[in-house]
Length: 151
Image (cartoon, rainbow, N blue to C red):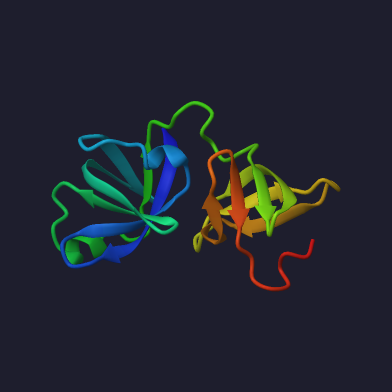
């Protein structure tokens, strides 16, 4: 099982969930796909009922989650499923304002937000929050606040 994303919060009143995609294969999942949700010792399975992009996030609808209250109970769960070969973030290049920052070595799963450990060309390691990155296919674009882009 591959980590595909993290549920951030409910979206709307009908049970949709705002999700931070961690693996690009999540967006390619079709309706009817079984997803496993994990949080600490809890593990739940749901059938994907709908998925759509909203900026850098995904909005997903799970079968049986039909209200904002039910969606709220899933806040903080990580979404796991079968990932596609070669779709991991490790090894992908990260750019900021057109300049190469480096290559992702690993992803740290911290409570607030997953963080990419980016190894710079000079060998230094820089932590880049994934919620500040946009997936561009073979690479990520980091949208860092003023001052943080300086390595």
